[in-house]
Image 1 (cartoon, rainbow, N blue to C red):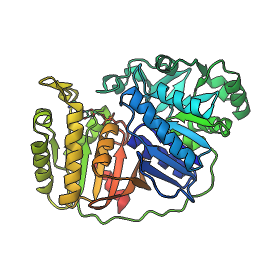
Image 2 (image 1 turned 45 degrees about the vertical axis):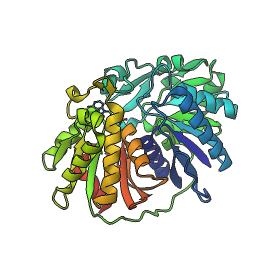
Image 3 (image 1 turned 60 degrees about the vertical axis):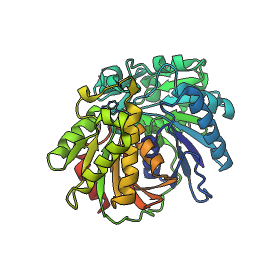
Image 4 (image 1 turned 180 degrees about the vertical axis):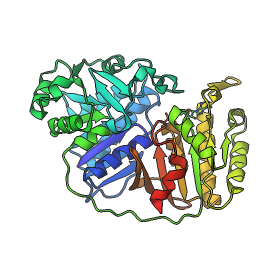
Length: 407
Ligand code: ADP
């Protein structure tokens, strides 16, 4: 069985879709939830919220997740991070890779953030977002993990005491055997591998089939050996209310909000109120959603334009306050307003919402767009169809088109 540790919840579902498409029967467990049995599963993805946690906490939480995966019979571990390598010089990608590789005695670990389907590619060691280097993409302005360099090895080196090497595209083109040999010969524990399309990921996946630890975005999962064809056990959930909750400040999410605003009611979270009176702000948002016409898909968002991003209000940080408000609104909307279809935008935001809803397990359902799917979850208030979207993922019309996949 493949065991995966994802550093945020959107990343966990992104990876699970890829695995499912590749023939894995897969479940996503949230944090330390115990699914009881993993019998019949080809993969378990543990969703953590460690991307921006303090380093020591991320390491301890990831180590504990690794132990659970081993107890459940995982014989290969996939460390999943964002395809834009979201991290700072302190971590958490490097420290988490270090602890997993140390515990499993892995001498080599590939580093493959590429997700070509979403325009994330690695060429000559540099990470591109579409035609732009990472440092010239909107990730440069991320509120929590601004990415100001593009060479993956340069991003990883400050995060680990171990050496980092690069394996360039010329070797990938020679096929899996050449890649396997080059990884083995690399003078480093970590090997950043050029991957510019799905064929490169397939070659890399074949080369690392027997590696105890692999790491990357979700793209590498497409390249791993397929165990077969999964059963389709998705069961639809009645549609009694829809809402979109956006904590992402990314350019893609801002376009999606603007697109939805042409036909759907939209409302911005007030950052000052989020900091000073979160309970009251939650109440106003819940009332506003409840006041919308039946069948509408109202959008609650935190950032409509970059100028909306404020790091502090009266010396107190805004980002966690916004997360708290969106998560609190989600809890009340599901419990009191009959919401059974919820689309969450933003990795940290999704983590806060899933935690607030007390969800332990996500059953992977219909795919919406690359990296985004509906999943089924049981909350204390009943069953919910939930889509968790990384900020930069999805087409511009996502907030109006996603619902069609559940029809
Ligand atoms: P993404 O997937 O785009 O990275 P996340 O949800 O992971 O989105 O991160 C966005 C972070 O920015 C969250 O912590 C959110 O609360 C915060 N945020 C959103 N809007 C604002 C804002 N206007 N001012 C300050 N922080 C904000």
